[in-house]
Image 1 (cartoon, helix red, strand yellow):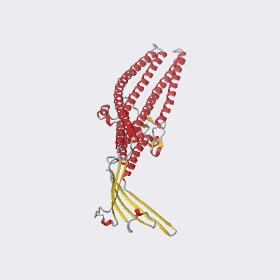
Image 2 (tube, rainbow, N blue to C red; image 1 turned 60 degrees about the horizontal axis):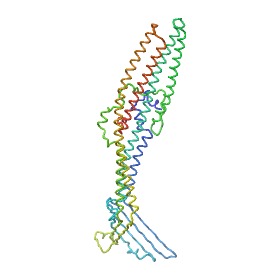
Image 3 (cartoon, rainbow, N blue to C red; image 1 turned 180 degrees about the horizontal axis):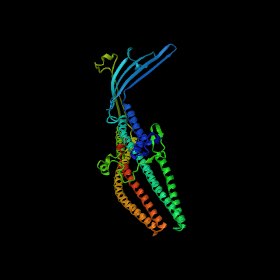
Image 4 (tube, helix red, strand yellow; image 1 turned 120 degrees about the vertical axis):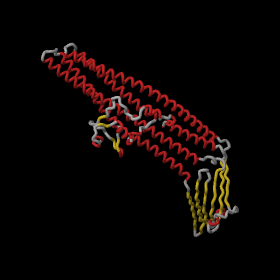
Amino acid sequence: MLAQESPQQVLGFTEYLAYVKQYHPVARQANLQLEMGEAELLRARGAFDPKLEVDYARKEFKGTEYYDILNSTFKIPTWYGIELKAGFDQTEGVYLNPERTVPPEGLFSAGVSLSAAQGLIIDKRRAVLRSARALMDEAAAERDLLISEVLYEAAVAYLQWAQLHREMEVYNEFVINARQRYQGISRSAAAGEIPAIDTVEAGITLQDRRLELEQTRVKLLKQRLEVSNFLWLENKVPVELQPEIFPEDILDGTEIFHEEIEDWLDGFVLNEHPKLQALQAKLQALRIERRLKINNLLPKVDLEYNFLTPEPELVDNFDTSNYKAGVKFSFPLFLRKERGELKLAKYKLEDASLELELSRRQIDNKVEALLQELESYVDQVNITEEMVENYQRLLQAEERKFSFGESSLFLINTRENKLIEAQLKQNQILVKYLVAKAELFRSLGIIPVNLD
C-alpha cells in the first residue's frame, strides 16, 4: 500500500497527480491509442513493401507429364504509382498451353506497370498511407485530451478530499470547545452558580457537534475511496488510501500549480489545442479521401511493359523485339457509385469543418468564462476571510461577556454556528477556486510537465 511505501503521512497534490498520469488505466489507454496509431501507420506502409510471388503447378497422369509450370515474380511498388517487376518462368509438358511455352532454360523478364489515368496522381495505397499519418497526429492529440481529462477528474477528487479533511478539523475543534464548555457549565450548575437547564443546552450543542463530525467522517471515508480510484501502481496494482494518509494542506490560498495563469495564457495558441489538432488531423484525412474520390471519376488505364530474355546476363542489352506488353481499360458509363462516394466525402468534410469552427469558438468562450469566474472567486475568497475574522471576534467577545454574566449560552452557540458556517463557506469557495483553475488547465489543453 502507499502508506507502506513511503514514510510520509501526507500525499502531496503534485505527487498524487504524478501517480495518476503515469499509472492510471485511462492514462495507459491514452498511450495505447498512440501506439495503435503507430501500428496503423506501419500497416499502411506495408502496402509499399517489396513482394515475392511464386506460383508452381504440376500435373502427371498415367506416366504422362501434362504440365509443369513455375511462375515467380519480384515486385517493388513505388510512391509514384509505378511498379517495378522482375520475373522468371519455366514450363514444360505434353499438354502445355502454347502461350506458356518458353525456352528450356526458362525465360527472364523485367519491366514496369503503371496507371495512366485513375491512380496516376493518387491511388488507394498512397491515400491510406497519407491518412494514416494524419490519423497518427489525431491519435496523439486525443491521447493528450484523455490524459488532461483524467488529471482534471483526479484533481477534483483530491480537492474534495482536502475540503472534507479541513471540515473534519473544523468540527473536531468545535467538538473540543463544546465539550470543554459543557464540562465548565456542569461544574457551575453543580455549584449553583447558573441554572441547571444550561447544562441541557450545552449537552445538546455537544451532541450536535459530534453528529456533524460523524457525518463528515463518513463523507471523508467515501471521498478517500473516490481518490483511491485514481491511484494505481505498476503492473496494474490498485492502491487504497490508508486512514493515516492525509491530503496536502492546500486550502490556505497558496498556488497549487507552479505556472501562473498569465504564463499559461501567454504560451497558449488556440490552434495548438489538442482537440483542435485532432479535428484538423481528421480534416486532413477527409481531404485525402475526397481527393481519392475525385480521382476515381477518371477511367482506369493500366499499362504494362516487360523486357524478355532467356539469358539474364543480357539484360543490359535491351532488345525491343523481345517483350510482353498490355493495356487494360475500364470506365463505368454512369459513374453513379463514384459520384455518390464523392458527395459523401464532401459532406463529411463539410461536417468536420463545421465541428472544428464550433469547437474553436467553444474553447475560446470557455477560457474567457473561466478567467472571469476565477476573478470572482478571488474576490469571494477575500470576503470570506474577512467574514471568518469578524465572526471570530464576535464569538470571543460573546464568550468574555458570558464569563461576566452579561450574555447567554444561546448567544454563544449562535455566534459559534455562524463562525462554523463562515469557515465551511470559506473552504468551499477555496475549493471552487482551485477546481476552476484545474478546469482552466483542461480547457487550455495543458498537461502539467512538472508531474514527471
